Amino acid sequence: MVEAAVLVNERLSGELQQAITALSWSPGGEFLAIASAGGELLLLDFPAGCEELLCGNSDESLSAIGFSADSCFLMAVGQASCLLLWELGGSGLRPMAIEPIS
Image (spheres, helix red, strand yellow):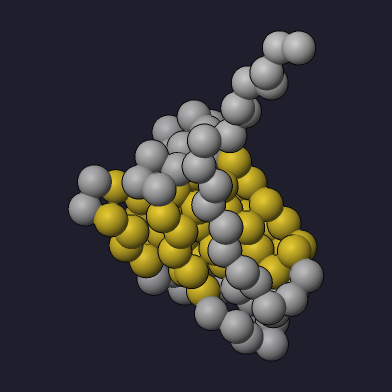
């Protein structure tokens, strides 16, 4: 009998406190962002082999997340009625302040 090929060599896993409400792969597949009903946003960085919690637990759910076409930016929106934006780059993640959009 032929041995099955290993499909996954390494696994990243993060833990969210509430139900997943949205997820998004970056266009090149380097990142996976996962949002929760509790306002958490977890970013899995596959090339670096790590995960980072970008938003902590809050009372306001995140409902949509997405990457820019060049994977340089990550955005999230939810019940708080404001846009959250991060710049992804060689120097790490930088949150960008955006005025709430009504």
